Image (cartoon, rainbow, N blue to C red; front, top):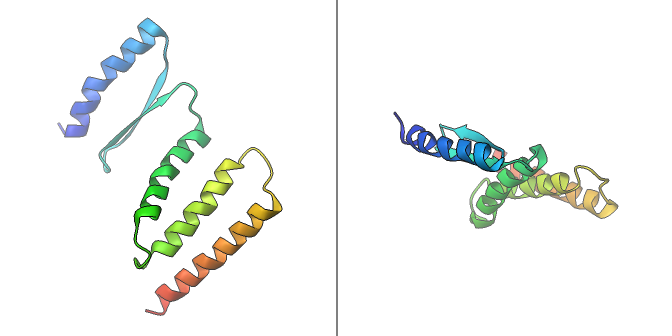
Length: 117
């Protein structure tokens, strides 16, 4: 049994107890390849989950040195995704569309640098 399965085996009874005694619903997501267990509360939806995962990508993008060859592509793609998720249920402003377009240009320049190597 893998360590992720051992953790999951111990966590599930606690979550089942929360459901049966306190009527707190949860959902468990497991990524065995990454060694990650995610526990979602009952108010979680796909947009909130995507935003949560994007936060991890943002942290990587913010902490990756600009000299890394993929930095510009990752950083600007994540920023575009962040804007899109924040406005998922509403309209983008002209400024947001302009920023996204500029970031697309930055991604293109980053890809051009990669292809010229």
